[in-house]
Length: 284
Ligand SMILES: Nc1ncnc2c1ncn2[C@@H]1O[C@H](COP(=O)(O)OP(=O)(O)OP(=O)(O)O)[C@@H](O)[C@H]1O
Image 1: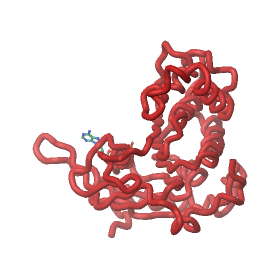
Image 2: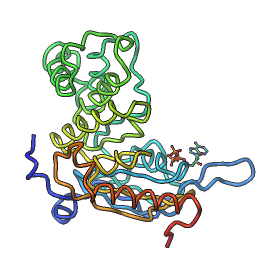
Image 3: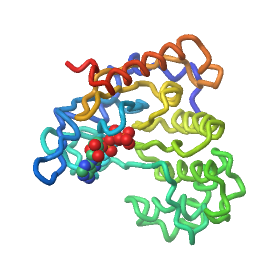
Image 4: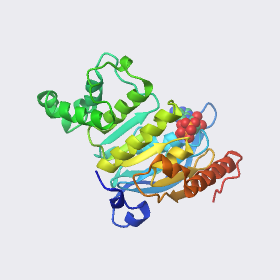
């Protein structure tokens, strides 16, 4: 794991790191009954490898739509989306995903659920049969131990609490060491204490492997705790109206969240989103 001092703020590294994600004037229209529904309007953004980006904004502004564009689940109606320098449809970068509801397969053990991406994703799937009882099992156990689930690998999903399931969900999203991790309100259904525990766990996992992370959240403290950059979006049709670097040293702790500069940041974000909800956002 990197030491706190080794993790520089996003701005200091920006010039030396590979560009991982780029949206160029990406527009998304969904077919409507009479006219097309404009969900995302000419959105451009660039994210460097290893950034932890949080996206915040009013409900329905297009945050999940951006996630789906980057993950290749959706194509832009206009504009382009690049991942690791290639247009998304042609990309070969591994993507990990976690959503609000950890959809574990109930008939499989937690370990088998965590190992699923290894069974499905190239290049692991070619060697899955040979390694599932040795190397891959060890890898799953090591990850489960990191998130505090040592000894729970043989349990079935229904035997775990919501917070434990979300820990296992993070393991499953990371088991194949993806370069990109897409998180759509992963802790939204959890109580505040469990959520805060998971912030620290996710921070440690990110500092370990340093994937590029996109996190969609409505929790501004969560965004400020975890992210290196926070993108604020306008009300629908969404555009990025604010791009804030978050320079707090790592590892951040709950004490960080009581510092003046932390509360000042979350207060600023709240005001920006309130203005966007009233249609008074800082749109260019
Ligand atoms: N497949 C679809 N067909 C039609 N409209 C859609 C589709 N997917 C999303 N939308 C609409 O596009 C807009 C943006 O949706 P998106 O899910 O990206 O918003 P969001 O910012 O993530 O919202 P929330 O914060 O409430 O989760 C919304 O108005 C949504 O209803």
